[in-house]
Image 1 (tube, rainbow, N blue to C red):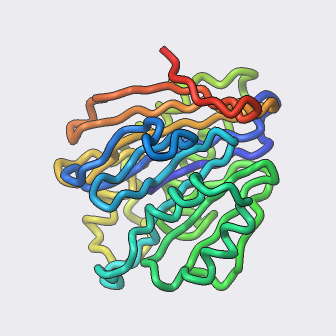
Image 2 (cartoon, rainbow, N blue to C red; image 1 turned 60 degrees about the vertical axis):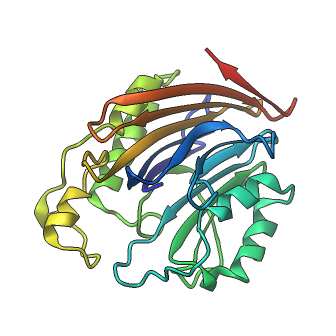
Length: 264
């Protein structure tokens, strides 16, 4: 993922709402969200080149999300795939806290990443580009992109504020309205762009919440909404380089019954 907004205890009906965009090269092969054949308790997309995932949920109610940390020129091509960090968490039965402790012991072998994990105890964040061991995500609406949690890039602030306003305005958030926030292709004001080592032209191209580009852009948007009973509504919409929606799927995860069901 390259942009995510996490709303924790910010809505009376839905104590956890996550909406995120995955930005990637269009040529990189990937599978849309589905139940994993080898791990039928996992619902997630899949990177078909390295085998991991960027976001997913488990039948037990766990949620995992990963974004890369933007640091041009510092990528180790021999490093293990960061996508395996989410996949391993969803497959294993341990807590988010215990899993992060295990990741910390090997985190320097990976290129820069942000890892967001949720279970029944709450939402935890860890990055191998900070000195903080882990962060318990506080109640409220928080944004994450390709810097560390809460860094106020323009597209983070824009989507974060829009999601907060929408959740504040309705008892039943409309999924189309939430997805619309993440379909915004408006670039940031050039004066507000972060300096991450990219050219100003490239920085501007990546500054919109939804990136439309022939080579690299938003491949899918995902909405996760968890209610007080432990049920998770999961919807994914996939896009081609022209930003046309090419696939849409909806799922219901019941963490009490530990079932994953496709919705029409």
